[in-house]
Image 1 (cartoon, one colour):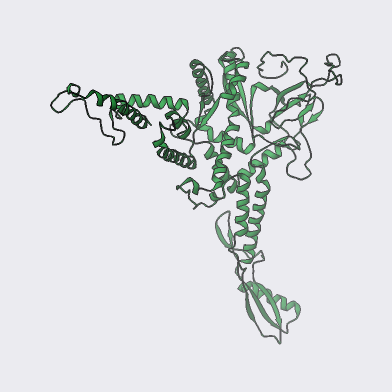
Image 2 (cartoon, rainbow, N blue to C red):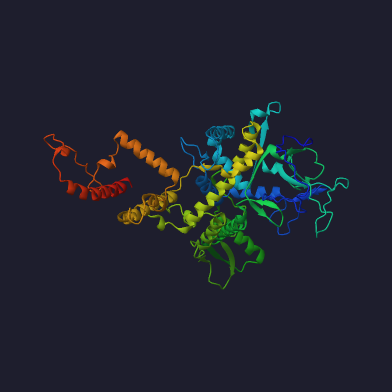
Length: 560
């Protein structure tokens, strides 16, 4: 990595010479394996959708400026990133991580440091929108080379049009070529040597989109892989090996909607006004004089008012003849004289069925529920079963986006923890699957669904309650009916015990489980102890076991 800018994190593990494959490791990031020579990254798109990656990103950004697309993007971003006045949009979740409290505390602290460097609490909406529109996100990790243990000092955003991820296959060296002889197999099999890096170009050639291969072109810098945060959308054009945005499916739908809207405007402007036909009696005048007479009549009666949209002025403009103006026709002697007739305007100008169809098609392509197209359509806050299935699909779509976007935090956190010697690369590989990110949620549907689930569990509990202690145990009911985890059971028991001690709730052992009233005390009104009263020993022995069993059963019911 000496020839690359930046730094590299090496786990120090060397691959065994016996573990080889002629196929390089595949990463689902939309990067092809290139041979180390010549130029790559340029192709010809015969279909005309996009020619280079620069053209593709530019098209996505132009689409985002369209009002319908902008509204759909805002719906997605607002669901994924919830900006609250006090709470952070995302927090790290380490409940599934099997580690000590000190390590978890250090991880949480470093995650907060990363959010502070990104200023994520204020810029979360902007960062997520850029990633969603472009389909990729780049950040340069700036560290102190002399003191790398200080961790990441700054995270600088890089325009995706200036950066490209390269996975380059080096040329085979005959002197170091690995020869493997396997039983029953062919000899001379070697595993390709892959080099991964980023190529940064301050002033890229947007027209050609050419990216240099083995020899970087002038103005380009090769940056080590670990120095750059790279988060892609996960959508890849397998035919061309290009990362796509979630807006790619809406390109055709948006173009169709634009054409329909433009054609509708042209049709209405041309057919909406009523036009008149003037038949002017020219008598026996010669052709030349008849035309002159017709022009004089036209200039005398015609008054063309033009609205200037740039200045907001209405002025008389007689220089232009448009297709919406009146018709002037001469009529010879013997006709019916001067006559004026009216042509009716276009019919069915108020139909918007085709526009609404393509709007729905655009929203379906962007993954937005069609019910959100109409601004007057409110959200149904009834039962979750009354909510359209599209809202459920949309909630799952937003959840997938959050999981993919969280890869950015994993990359940053990995670098931060390894540089500060909090964890090793081997430890991180074991921990990364157990680190989750809790995004702030503001979906009414999820709240309604959770409420109905709780109501259903409590209803099942009321039905199964008479059989607790006979066919079902208390632990079974809490785990299988109420769906409480071991951690939740422990926390709830501790909370109940604490509230009983504080007197917030009555002690179940001192309360009648049926009536809810306190049990009678052991003393009479005169202050005499009940135990001093003579009791028949035979009756006491007979009633004791029955009372104790019933008391235990009532106590269990009261605890639930």
